[in-house]
Length: 179
Image 1: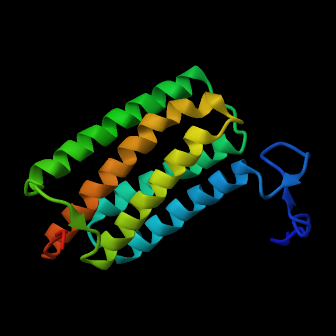
Image 2 (image 1 turned 135 degrees about the horizontal axis):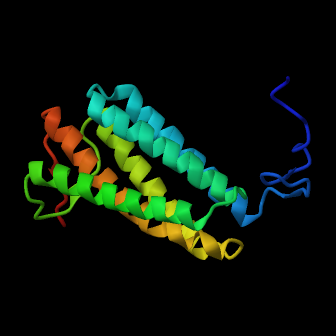
């Protein structure tokens, strides 16, 4: 089977399970593109991470983001699926708390950066915020609002994880100072 179909050459695409073609400029395709960007950026972070626990965490997040993209593309979900996402939010909160407990108290804004892995995690965090904004404004799938708490918490987790990775690698945080 060939990877290319040539069906999108005219600037149209179809969502999961649909034969109806739509312009690729539709908001749903922008949101799907952001999920791809989040996953690709997390892949860059994974390429430079060494600790198995953080590697496993980021792979798990990639799988979640892929599933979120599938929901956006039209994959059906049930009330049981919604309950699973509620549990995932709790799991993210537990991880945020665990990482935060190991970090020095943050008393000022920090500049994203430090190690390569941390920089990619910060970039993924920013892309997750873009995904959140796009999903909030996406009027085509109001029923996807149950994903917002997960996405919101995920950006928080990525922030503390980026700090934690830098700490583990001995990279000092750069404090932002108003000049």
